[in-house]
Image 1 (tube, rainbow over the protein chains, first blue to last red):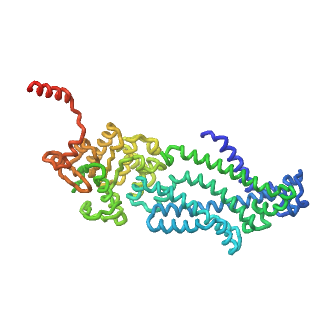
Image 2 (image 1 turned 60 degrees about the horizontal axis):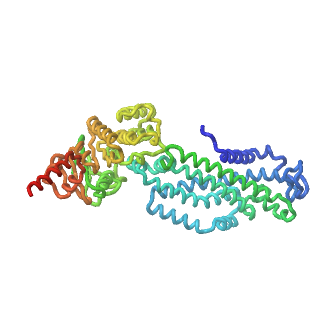
Image 3 (image 1 turned 90 degrees about the horizontal axis):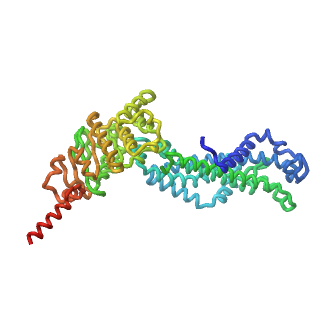
Length: 272
Length: 245
């Protein structure tokens, strides 16, 4: 076992802390998610560590439950975008020809429309549920994963070992999942950390605009929205989600960097 | 051109003369514009999709760059084992035994099955590629410049191995190369290619004996030769000249 560099260790610890807090939210949160337990915008105290929000709910509790929602939605959307994006990207690269053209031009078309506006239009027409949120976020983001996966796979598809597999008579499934995927994994994993953070920001933006997670369910973007008026009076409740998003973003990327370094320096990495 | 089982046909020519294109046409990667390819008495389909699994199995290819001819994320065992599984449906114990037998055939020992290609030397990589081709029990192996990337000693070992295996397994070799020394050593018949066409074809003794056509003459004369004593000869001839004057 090689030693884990300090930066990766910090990233791992913070990421793990967020994940565990999200996972065991009901156990560690001091109060119920939507319970009104104190006065309006009370300052931090031993009773309410981060104070209370605009209608007297405990901010720490809201933050913990909010992390649960935000991370779950972002994670699901990331997984969805990676599976669709990479399967389509690999298929385009391996099959080539008009299939590649059709897929690539369609993706270009979708990418030409600003993601946020696209999402807002779709979500204002459709009922906003967790499932639609995840679908919209995941599918919109899969365009970027498609681009990356296709670019990486095009490089790999011309290798002699892929030609050897085709000469052997292997089907497309084998070529995509057994020959190309293992060699495309490290750039994809590194990108996954980035995309996850973008999804966290995306869901927070949507919630802030009121089209994301719906109250009384808590999520980080929603907490900013609920408490933004307090900033004028010096109430920091709206700033905590920003701190949470920033620290999560940095720590996830520290971990992703480490994974990328580790897999490419492995013997038999993509470049040697 | 034709090639009988157990024989070696060498295809020579300069870079860009169409040697590799010929190989790609035979394997079906590049459908030929005209002409037919007959194999074991039947005509092969022009492109890959039209060929049966047996057609594919009996025609194996070994590449110039062994580094990129093997998936860096598969172990040697997986690389050799896949054709066994794919063509013969071998699994478990039987597959492992066959992999071991193949490793023995290419003169590599036990522990290699669990190694990755990056952990092998150039010559070992090429041996694994040979084993992968042999695993399919082919009738024709196309060797596309298989020794060009290796140093002379290792290349020699690979050539010996190929010849030995040819004797044992009775496969035919189509040997693509630009190295005339190799050709002289291993070929039964030779085809000389220039600008996409075969300019000279026949048994080795015929092709390498005069009278040559222009291109073959150029090709043969462009091989550097080790000649001792040339300086003395030049000096001697100059002395003769000056003495004559």
